[in-house]
Image 1: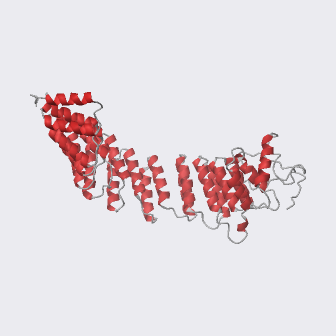
Image 2: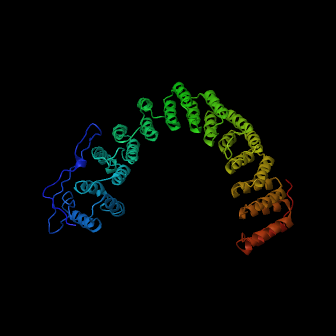
Length: 491
């Protein structure tokens, strides 16, 4: 196919300031000139003059001639941008330049596939000036499939991605202008998803009043808000300590037909607790239960952590027990935080009562919660309670770490209860715990102090089989101690 020869640069529609009322061009992009390359080197209209006079422009020209050949169609351009240019370390940043140049070819016309790919590339790399130029070009040059009665179905997704990028970067005003431009191109109302992005963008940017203005605009434009819209505004109200307005919006949400979800309740509860309105937060939690909304782990964490931060751990315990009795405490909820606070306060007995009550009703504690409580009981010299808790853990398949296990064995051996400690070892081994060298040493020295030579020698033989004894000298030393052992008077 013979290519026409360009005698002078052709203005690029993409860079013309058409319809300035739709999108701003605060940062103008240099308008590249596209003169005709020398006929003897390249008869194709490739963009070489816009590059600096170095080896880079020759390399790019060679790259284009090699991988992007006529016919120039949107499919071929998209294939070139995706599979060739995008992965080239030296030329990938020329994607918008190549896209721009393609629009100057008379026989070529961009469609929604090239628009969408370019919009995503520019938005993902925060090239917002170029993105604004692209959107203005789309407004001035609609997609070819928009020639009929209906507009192109891909217009809204393209603007969706661009608006989301603007809001993510805090450029909410640019996002609003893009939204206004999109409304003129699409059929019917914009989707509530895009509206939610803008509402959330205002909230994240600290512009609560503008978020409300846009919400009112949504309602006026007959875009029905969904639960996500209300959750965003509820969060904004709570952050601004406007709890009365938040509750009014919550009522409006239910009148609108949008059922509050767990996020709605969590947002209000967290807002109340942040403002030290504990009674209102608890009432909201019980209303959540009455409405049959699913209680989540996050809900419990907000309530319990809120009380614990205010040194009101007793109320947190009562709340957990009450939720457990009502059968709404989430399965798998980790109440380690309460156990840790009680341990620090030296209230291990109360912690044991709470964990037994919750466990009895099917709310099994986590390993770390049990380990924390065992440490608290050990420090309080409540060895019997710690032993019973460890046995219960093992029977339920909760296998402790070796450090916690060995410390409890040491406590038992210190008070002459090595036989019980050894039985605990056997139980733990049957549940998957692998006793280490420390475990055997603790038990052997316990039997040595109690003068139980036979039991100690049996353990030494097991240590030898497991290769826990490094040499014959260590073996003889252990056996000699057992042979000379006498029951301690203390025991």
